[in-house]
Image (cartoon, rainbow, N blue to C red; front, side):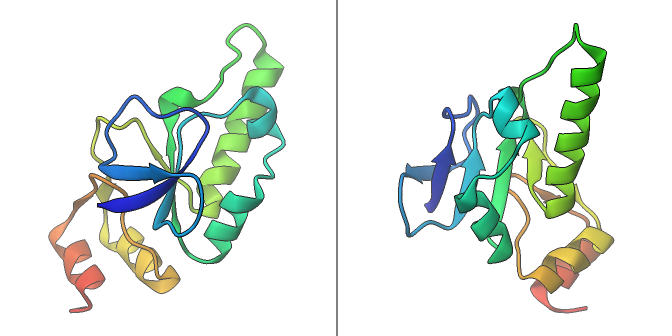
Length: 132
């Protein structure tokens, strides 16, 4: 079983991980973020893990929203796009994420692996296995 550093609340979905509070760990699971944590993201553990090429998954039902404030809602959406650009994998825990050949190439170049429950296209599987 993979060891995962849990940040925030435990997600409502099973990631097939044993949650730990300190190193060593294989990946980070972000179970929740507050408004401030999302808008002014600076969690050193997560940033370091991304810099080292470790997998970081964010459980999307644990994200804050602001449906009654358009400007704040737009800022939250921008912050989420930034996290995705950094390589954080967003998941709702229920739907499986499809990994295409292009994404597989990027994962292989960065030394990362697909997220929990990922579904690989046949070509993506070949790329990640080193056949292509």
